[in-house]
Length: 87
Image 1 (spheres, helix red, strand yellow):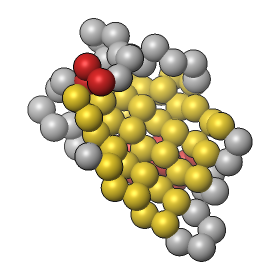
Image 2: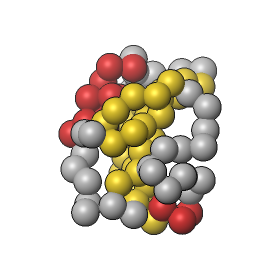
Image 3: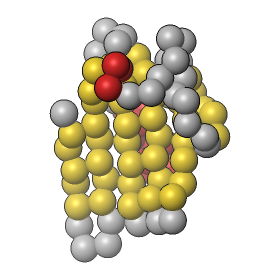
Image 4: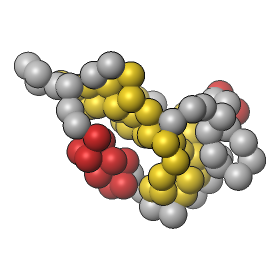
């Protein structure tokens, strides 16, 4: 499931999928490069690709992601922290 919000200058995407569809370790960390952080008590990874910022984490058998294009890091992290774990 994915939702995308856009305006003239920016876009936010919020997604969730079964963990097996992503490359995550059993403890919920992602096998990707980036900065480690915590989102609602879960291990997460923050990445930046050009103008896109992304946070990914696992919880209760699902992989969550929040990305923002054309927005700074802090709003992306705040949106990620507002997502409740589906467990």
